[in-house]
Length: 521
Image 1 (cartoon, one colour):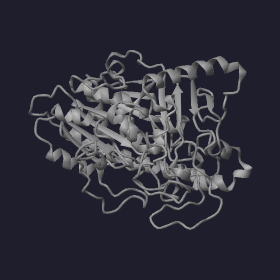
Image 2: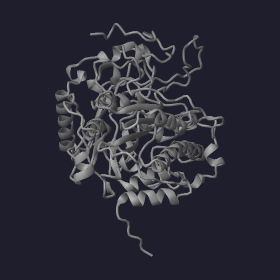
Image 3: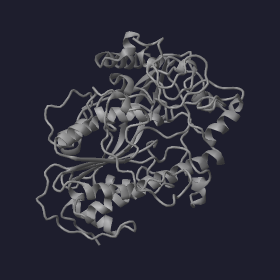
Image 4: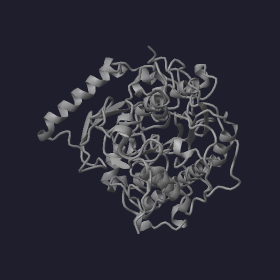
């Protein structure tokens, strides 16, 4: 039997109500429909593309993400500005790339007050603001003179009495969203940032398999060795993605019940890639390529999938345009409204990404500066300090750690500790993948993404691609110069910025919360 729906909102509502996750009672709102959308922004912590059900990962059940995608637009080529939490989130908030954000462009530093965030502009335009879970961070926003987290007021008091696994945060995201909605001023549109702490590590080892997931169906990226340890690690990661999705599912049901869903712009994505070797903290594909689905039932009437290149710095101007905010500050991001509403091609034929310091992983608290340009077909990475270990210095022997400092062994601290990391280090002499993920890198790397999404085959020395490599390098440098990247002037200022998270006992400068005087300009 074929059913005809009058509009996409009917389809969403019926889908929600028929799902085993939803039991809906709907009513028409008594107040006049707000022309500006509410905005629900759901951001996972460390999730790579393509790790949702609708992208094809059979061992992940993500009904909420999938329904947002089915009722709106699913993006196959969305990228973060940086493969690390706080610089990526700062870029989302400002609509700028990390090299334009001073301290906020590096991990766990500060967020200078002079950088305008879209959340403040929405609030000034009459929006109610709130967030739960992880907002901008890690870092110290107070030191910059801000009175609150750049995302807005926090709603994180409600906690779960029991968590699904020991690795999952106790924040009851859904109940905190309800609290925000209860306190929201009547008649105002809202912006709410749902910042899950999942699937950030640590995981309860074996939890994915114990939940009934099949090791044989774990979808391993090509840069991870194929064994029971890595497969189990992937399933543990998948289980935490499902927890993020479950709370989003409840939020969507709540909005449907309140008659708010149809006029709510829903954006679901992640801040950077998965916490595995050669993913998070890397400019290679699985560090910067993230899921993205956007729906607005009242306005986005045609569901579809797009391969257009977009950056998450494009969200800030998109939100502000939809909210009718005028006299916007200068942003590097480009509004997505032409893609969302007019079905035109993206204004981008490339995206830029970059990284500086991640953790305290080297002597003198130095980072690993790199920039990249990603087109539809190729990824070119430019590494500025080829004498440095990209994932942090190895530590060959266990050593005493001073009070208040993080442990040193086994090193490579820009990679989150995990069973996968441990296995690869222990087997490094017998496994080619260790070299790709951990060892020092050339100044330029080039990958054919269509053939090699895992970035295993560096084509930078191929004479057949010399012309392409030169063209991409020139394009990257031209854009960085235009955007005022200090690295283009030979500046080392990023290595001066303070780190407010715990330090390790590497040699040289290691004073927490202080500027490294050697690199201050």
